[in-house]
Length: 106
Image (cartoon, rainbow, N blue to C red; front, side):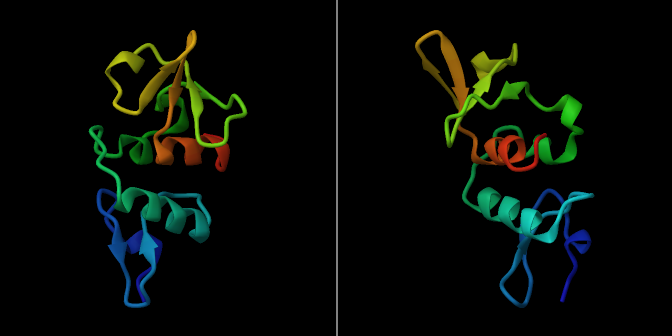
């Protein structure tokens, strides 16, 4: 069976046991699996850069208490396909970015 670190970061792969993996250091195996599951059905115009970047380079967002959204505070939010405007705020609904922030605190 392949380890998560044997799999190319830009692609999601399935091992012989049917498990999906992404390659990202210092994460638990279950987090890598969940991230891979999220990526499988996504079309990301940024080619999943958030996986490659350190947390200081990710788009700026904060948890505002909404289950599947983050409040976007990034100056490039106007070009992001995962942004929805609500009232005076802008909210990110990218499943991978939400997971990184809410579950992994990145």
